[in-house]
Image (tube, rainbow, N blue to C red; front, side):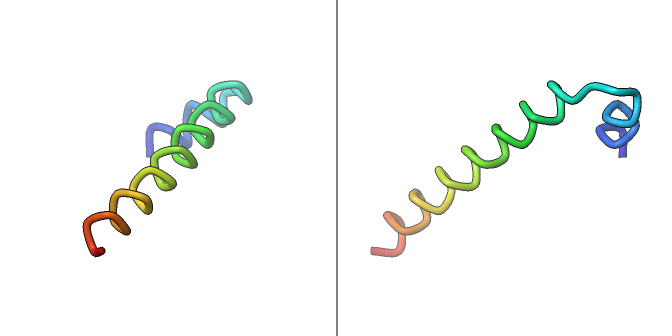
Length: 38
């Protein structure tokens, strides 16, 4: 819950960056998962 605290401090850039990283990571994970299953 540390990330939530930092976001509450007023760091929109940090939040956006985290969201971008999560988006890219999930996309990569899905691609890797599909490759592993096929």
